[in-house]
Image (cartoon, rainbow, N blue to C red; front, side, top):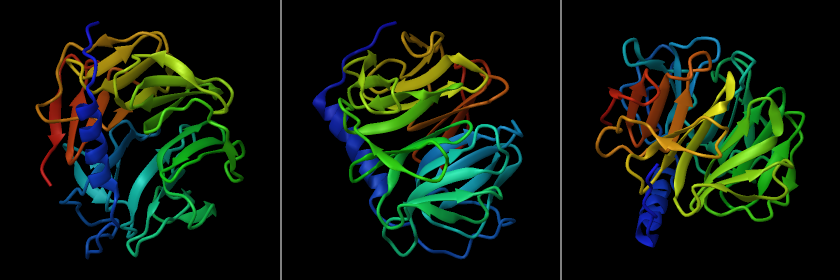
Length: 299
């Protein structure tokens, strides 16, 4: 694997791109009913494959949650057009999701939960206090989220949250990923590479790809050895690990020109099916990154 070390300019550009995607409230609009087509994507923040339906992709955007696929089209899940800066599907409970972000009127939502497929939401913790940009869930009820204003919050029961010390964690952190089956082990995609905590976020150490900004990171749900990450400044940026994130090798196929992967989704049943998203574009690979096809582009 050959990687080039990122420059401070590259890091600044990544931070600027993330700021543009998350500084303002989501616009209001007429679209929002569950059956209405979603013709406009405003800043994709997260993609996830439905654990109960491999053909359905969930897309958290600056303006609501959108589901669908490149072939079947796209629809809003409900009429909440909030800015979903943080979003995670529960890995084993169908229809359960958690989110954090901004309502259309501005401010911070805290941490919210949906039990009906993101149609409706209930605030469960820290209302008005946090806006978590990095979020992940480990079954059954361990949740981690990093407040954009500072502080790594965690819950072991899906409801009550406390602050972890997060000693050594590099800021900015772009994404978290828990190792399937190991809720105490957490990896972070940061501006200086991948870091790991084995004590629920209390302490952190460098783990791999030190020095390379890592904008996204995720594990295959059915195989904790397989992980994907995007390393900005490497060529190609998309990398795959077969040993739980310790070492990485480049996927043989390059992402479409101009696509920086700020989120990665992996099919829970078939880890060779991978989605990469950034801006308003989503690309799909069915062969572990050997080739990519754009399934959604434009505004």
